[in-house]
Figure 1: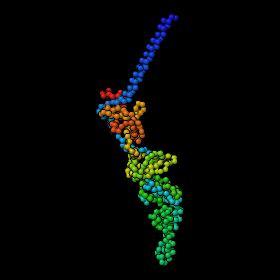
Figure 2: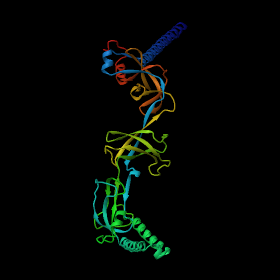
Figure 3: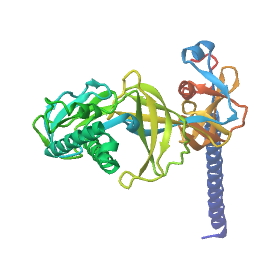
Figure 4: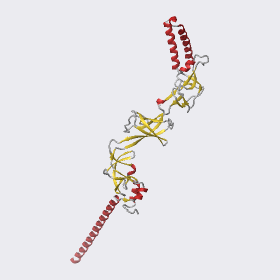
Length: 381
């Protein structure tokens, strides 16, 4: 091969190489331009806003608020249960082994203080009643003779024996009125009555006529329901500082009742890992009853001023970040990304936006949906 054809081939190869580099370089520039365009388009899309007419603002119930730091008040939830007020309830039970002869009340009955609930019989009571009658007769005889006649010692012994026998009957559960009737000939020895110590409603009656019952068995529970308790159970780790008298809202069957804190437990239940806060709730209208489950809402304030918005004002952006919608001009809204710092019930503590900013407080979902349609559109097409 001659030298000239060789140089010609080399020149042709170099020419193709330059052309390829030019084409490749052109492609790279074009790709870079496209990527830049996509990035700019994405930025434009991210900052896109929407302009809404006054009609749309009214129909969607869109309202705005000025963002400012403030001490927020929010509810803290705890499950609870309505229970009897132990200061206004009384469990009636025999103090000696007995047999139920007759009952006078049932669940739901209203009773007055001192009203008979049941008649019982006891051999122990019969012995005590007989001893009482003996000492009563002796004491009455000694009194009639006089201390000067029988002597001081006998007089004191008779009095003490009578007083002791009377006290024993009371200790066994016999009422003062029945003790007075005991000396009458027609009084059945061995019988006595259980009476109500308070006025209220019978909430339990766990006994039958003819049933033998041991001392201490719970037969009847009487409850005054004007004021009841609610035991709220908070997680043991809950950082909730409650004080005596703090107002609390109790919800039962979609009805709300005002309550207040009266006691706070300082131990953790080893089974449920919760601590109990006891509330007093007024029940004058008899709407609540022991055993009902309740939803309890404690009213808590933040430790200091915070920058917070309601839950309805906070929305997720397409990339998953949180955002609110800023109103720069009347009816014109743009999204603004924020950082969620903490959650306080319906309040969300945020940062990343300046205090004094006007933002959508209600209707944020509608604003987001309009922005998703394509950004600013003065005519809202």
